[in-house]
Amino acid sequence: MVKKRVGRHPQAFRQMAVERLKRCDNISELSRELGVNRGLLYGWRRKMEPIDTEMGRRRRSRENPNYAKR
Image 1 (cartoon, helix red, strand yellow):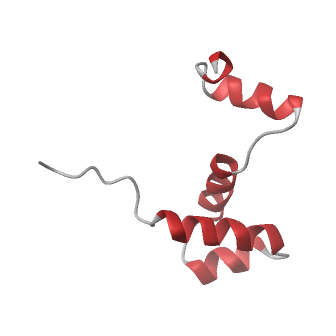
Image 2 (cartoon, one colour):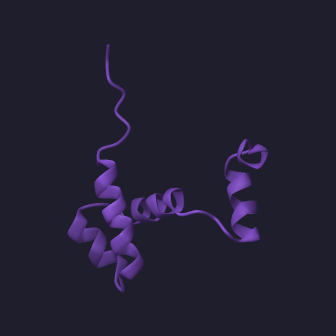
């Protein structure tokens, strides 16, 4: 049986990166330090943080039509 590879970076690394992103003043510098693309950092943050605003719920439902059914 072949294990499915979810991503290059472990979940613990992603969580650490998102926590640092919250406190970071220079996102480009952080992305260079961690060796990941800026867009990847933003994507991890979007997936890990809950959406509390109406605009965020609308955006999330456009990205994933099944999201609104939850």
